[in-house]
Image (tube, rainbow, N blue to C red; front, side):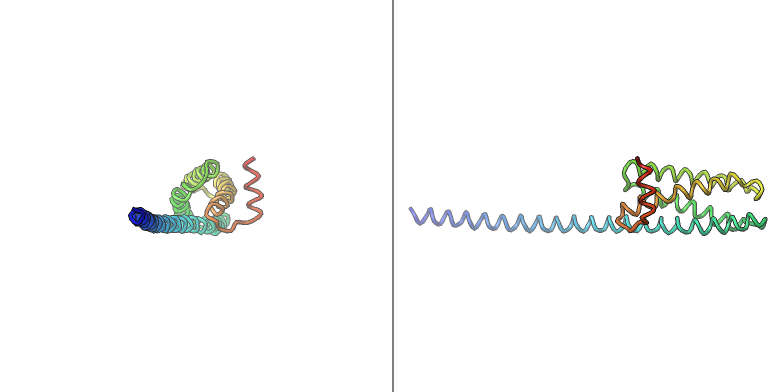
Length: 174
């Protein structure tokens, strides 16, 4: 009788050990899969943010090129077209990238998209330099909004952000 109890107890220990090993292996594989998915999602978000930041930085160059030609009373249609293309690119990239932001930052990104759309509409007017005050104001508003949107996206993606932008953008939330 003692041998049967000992044998039965030994089988229970072996069976428990096997079940524990199988469950641990399955959880380990599942955890690795989830970690890999998370890493892929993070890399994709980082790429989206990087693409948007690159387009936002190009915006400043395109604005300078456009305003230089416009203020010199030269044909700025090529520069205006390039600026329009950049505005559309930023709008589209931001549509995807902003989904990772919290409510306040997401609203700020949406407001920036509205600024981009407003600027695009003002560019469509093809105003001469003497009448371009609405365009210049729309550019200034868009540039100002751009700083905190770029900061919010960089911060969320774990990318480095400019300290002065942090001070400016964190203080506007209060």
